Image 1 (cartoon, one colour):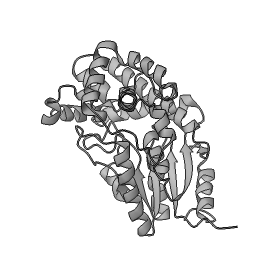
Image 2 (cartoon, helix red, strand yellow):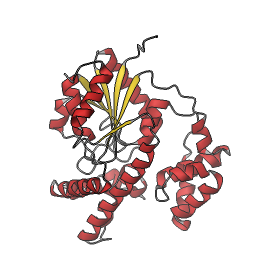
Image 3 (tube, one colour):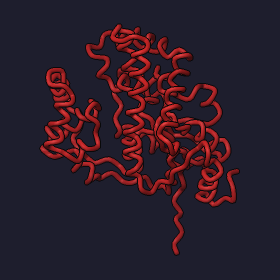
Image 4 (cartoon, helix red, strand yellow):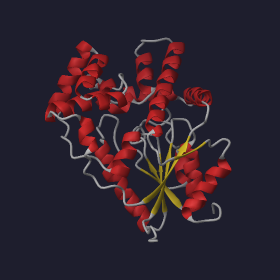
Length: 321
């Protein structure tokens, strides 16, 4: 039998608040690894507390990549992520170290591991037009329109996910072809590494909900609202006509905090809405993760030994170093 000589990498996937970052750091320290963040919020500077970004002290424990790449008013695409991540991985492998891909952004994982199709580039004028339509009709109506022209994409995209609805309609209107068809015919090369996919997730959804709630309260105590006030004070965001349409501020918690500081809700309503939005994110992440048929699932709280054994077996070691 021919041996698989490709370099190895470990992909730590999972819903928000499942403990991916902590385990990634522990693995990197034990195995001589470097962490590649696969998180669409961590690429933005200034999104720290609310995005659960590893602190400076945590980042000092192991090398981290693809964090703080953009200002919060700057765009960053999945295609850019794939290019940047592959460059980071090439460097890690060249140094003889283990790439550890950690995060919960399914689109980023797909772009990195499977490649992206050569679909139409973004069209700013069309995006503005679609956003204007949404102002009048609502994103739910545009999601219904998407379901008519691309039911496959609509089934994957939540009716409140404005960014993905906008992109799917943009691609269809530019090309006359559904975005799901473009994705199915992806021309990008797969990542030339042997990847162990691990999903970290509590087996009971209520346990994850409790973790989400406790983490959000810890974020509030750590100064999350002050962080959002600092974002609101940035001249570039103050000058933006619709800052909440920016991808950075669509991150869960930030939109709700921004609206609270605008006086749109009470403190209790703000907390409730932010936690509910985070639960919805976790639900969407579970939907994506269930499609990763080659991934192995573990509860990091009760199956630590089995998780470590899976890593050791993949790396050909008796146990983690």
